[in-house]
Image (tube, rainbow, N blue to C red; front, side, top):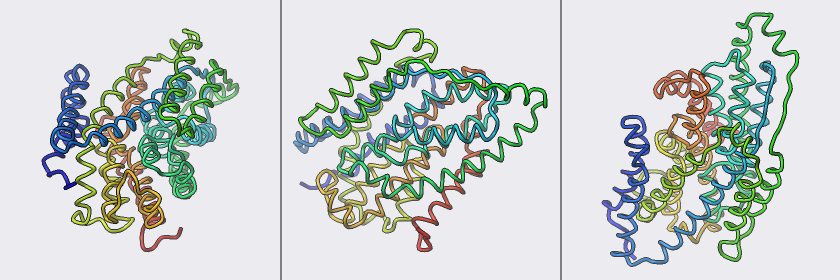
Length: 423
């Protein structure tokens, strides 16, 4: 079948630009009509695929992938919302570093979205007497983004790769060194910032508030449901059994979790509702876009791991990193004349280093702006409701992303994807 023409990429581009720009420029319009943007633009792509290319199988395959994606992200979101962590006492810098390090592991088990929603409120409470914007920014850097690089559960781009055939443990096996390097650098920088911040607090406050740190956990029965969801990831047959198990675990969590725990977490389904509608549009508009990129890959000038790392990363920073991941993965497959839907084993044999570059670039650079990854804006919103002063969109980029995160990503690129690589 011949590749789709260039104009079929317009709905995909329009939706990504709408996601990036409208929440900042026309916030109220976006909040009221975002689902119509997703439906209308998605319908254009699906209509073309069915009406012009007559490719019913392609649409059905994409629908299955969308349902699998939504089942995992939604179930983790619901179950994590049923766990409540109460923290009393002010954290010392080393305690904060330990918290972020542990949270970075947890993100790979319940996803960056689940971990962000579970841990941002305890993070704010444990630093309430001295919390500033950099506490929120580094939480976004680490817990909401970089940390989720070790499993397909960790970050949406990697789960999309898993649905395309990337083995579950592949990212852990190949990306752990880059993950550890970025994590170590960011935690070290944060420790310096936080030590300076802690030193500015009055001595009586420091001594009193760090003397008796206590933790209390509610809704721990949801750990059982988390285990069920994690186990379901490995269920591939029969069709939709995996998704049914995940949804069942989420429903059980919703029913059995006491209402006071959901209230304490300010839990609402609105964030996952937005994810569901937007990704419906993204999955639909990506059908012709991915086919086009596969067919025209040689003309895009991407021929090395470093090229794919920076191209995927920079675009992930200004658009959502999940569709960006798939777009460049399709491009890489096209360079080898392979089909993204069927030839993953052969691609890994020929060019697994490019998949590593695309994976790390999508996950790490998703923290470059508030719109790079779904949890970023959620964390900002929760912090603002808690009366924490957070950087503006451009303040976030100018004060933190460019001077801190970008150099860290540059070091990772040199160490792992350049001709001078050490690993």
